[in-house]
Image (cartoon, rainbow, N blue to C red; front, side):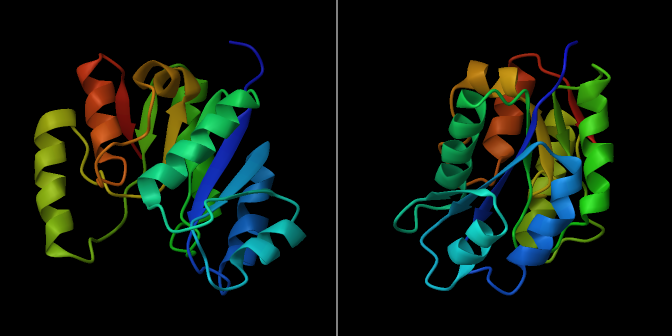
Length: 182
């Protein structure tokens, strides 16, 4: 496997309080950062521009899935081989990024899903039960995920439903891609 280009895609909606710290935290672990501003009415996009990351503006609120899809498409067009999703609200620890990416770098997985210590909503518990049975992961709704860009190219879209990446992971598993959780 040749040199990998790791691109982080961050969907953001009104994250001015946290986005600067998030961007500073992830920068050492990735080659490129694409922030997709999903119609923020605060200074999220301005702050991201000051942090010298690529800002892709939706112009209006289009939702998580379309924001990720637009960011992934741009990342792939710019040569990304690994795409990483990371939430802009500061809930993830940037130090977890190497562990999420490593199974892809070692050729052991095609999609790697992070795992949060707890689920804030009952619906997340239900998704976890379904995901455990269907794809062998316990936290499909975690916003920290890494994807081999070839999987995205093959599937052709991030999600068509509002499922925060769950549909993509299920589609990848159905197509025979290796799914792991860290």
